Image 1 (cartoon, rainbow, N blue to C red):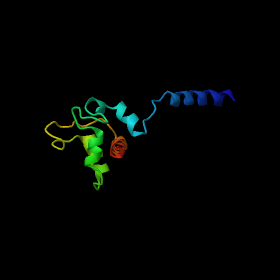
Image 2: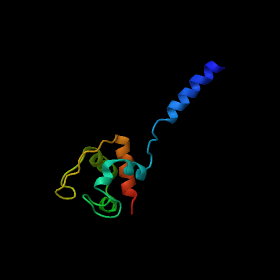
Image 3: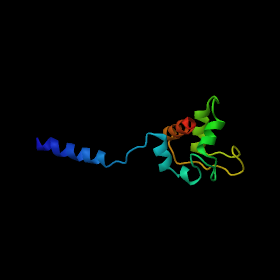
Length: 104
């Protein structure tokens, strides 16, 4: 019995020590460098996230386009300051894009 319990305990402890994956947009946003240039309600270096949501409301393919901009960066969309690429996975970029577009 000990031969089974000790490895299972060790495996469980290893999984418990893994960082929690952010699965909601707001938590993910706060964990990424996005907050250096964006806020939800007001323009900073980049537009507010609510401005982004309003500009892309009812735009076909907006989630995919915004996710691409988040992941790879963009230039000229909101003025002369380019948005740099972000170290996010495609899944994280899509979660962020969907969250941004849900803001009213």
